[in-house]
Length: 196
Image 1 (cartoon, one colour):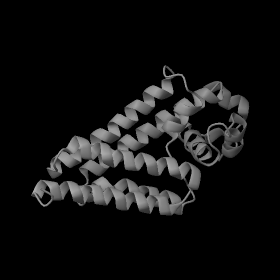
Image 2 (cartoon, helix red, strand yellow; image 1 turned 90 degrees about the horizontal axis):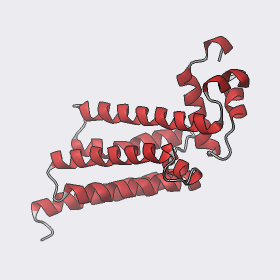
Image 3 (cartoon, helix red, strand yellow; image 1 turned 60 degrees about the vertical axis):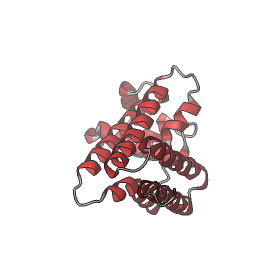
Image 4 (tube, helix red, strand yellow; image 1 turned 60 degrees about the horizontal axis):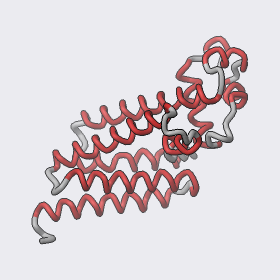
């Protein structure tokens, strides 16, 4: 990256990848500066410490995820079921690129345990938006008890993301996707009366 052409999004994107690889505790401003080939003194004008950078990276990630969800909602080529399971396709793509995102929002809440810390607010907003996305799609699909099914599907996804932080394994993504598919099928069967 050219020193004079470094952009905020470039720094945040590289910092995000470092956080995915090294974790919050293992990532430093020095590492980010080295990765983007930009002087540390210049970076600290924008992010005076790691806490500021982590918060900004999480905001950036949140915006990316929100944009991805909006685009997915508007994609008329995908069925509702495909939209519900698209997160697993995205995770598979991450793993194939040697990226293991896990859930940085949960990791940040662990790293900053004070519930009043701003990362907790970001995490709560992101988790609520994910649940609302799933709930809206399930409502369109007219499944029985979409709120409960959305909670079940989100819990499976959260488990998958947590395991990715530890195991870095495609098999966890595959298992979680199959479980999400099963939850969706069961919800559709209940609606059709097949399980009564």
